[in-house]
Image (cartoon, rainbow over all chains, first blue to last red):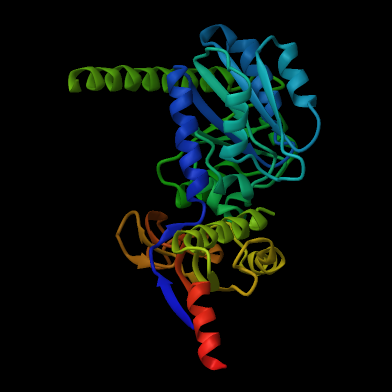
Amino acid sequence: MHESADEHAIERILGKNEEMADHNREHFKSLGACAFNLMSAPGAGKTSLLETTFKIAGGKFSSCVIEGDMVGDLDADRIKKVGVPVHQISTGRSCHLDAQMVARLLHAEPLEKADAIFIENVGNLVCPAEFPLGEHRRIVLLSVTEGDDKPIKYPVIFRNCDLVIFTKCDLLEHVDFNISEAIRHIEAINPAVKTMQISAKTGYGVEQWAAWLVSEISEFKQHLKSDKHVHHTAH
Amino acid sequence: MHEAAIAKSILEIVGERLQSLGAHTNAQSVEVLFGEFRNVDPESVSFAFDSMRALFSGCSDCRLSINTVTAAAHCKDNHHQYRPQAENAYRCPTCGSGIGKLLQGEELDVVNVVIEIERPDKEKKQHARVGR
């Protein structure tokens, strides 16, 4: 004898990842750190951007880095050399970080107290868009050697981010990358997004990026304070 | 290729619902919605699902039925409703402005699981005896 049951309740397929991301977000908050998820295609310059940021603006806020790579710790070594604490996640065969991997790291290794935690995702414009990690801000890097049509080809990642940074802008005169066209494409998908132009090699735009970070970190800390205030008055 | 992770998550959700109904249950089918503004390829998910389902208790015969949800947006300047598509760079075909609000197309949900419930062993045995 068989009966059958229809289980109609709607459930988000990646709900577990989202719950875990919320957990990580709270963890970062408890450290007083604003977490930034850096996403881009492979080779767009995420690590170079971080190196230059720490060299030029390292004194403006304290940082800690979580490096996500499929294999090896080459990027982590580069970050270590500029004197910033770094934690490595090797994803093995996975093409993106997920919240569970970050949570495992948080339970295994205590993170340094820092104003900013930079999570460098695996280089990929597709999969990382689907897996929030617990970040407070999402940043996408698009190098000018990739082409200004990339926002049309990868709309999901460009829709779900707070800032797009055009990297390798020192090469602009050598490539057919139309910045205003790229910005137009991005704004059609994500009207609230900010954009910035940077060259990690020459330092062009790094001050503006550092100023953005300082302002986001201070806004984040302001929220933390008002959260605590609400918490205290509630009791 | 995060489609394997999506297929696994679907099977985990089915597995949890089977567990909540007790030991003698099998999933017949699971219905999901994929919005077209998500990075998910239905064919790859189906392939991964069929390859993995035998590894999940009670799921070896479970069929996956995927419904794709067309994206719908309000344009940000004139609130026309339209389907954002790559050929128009996701712009409103009427006025050329971009996406204001995405009304649908970001779904990634399990909406229904059909589960077969076997009667407990004791009753089955009774049936068998009556049959003789």
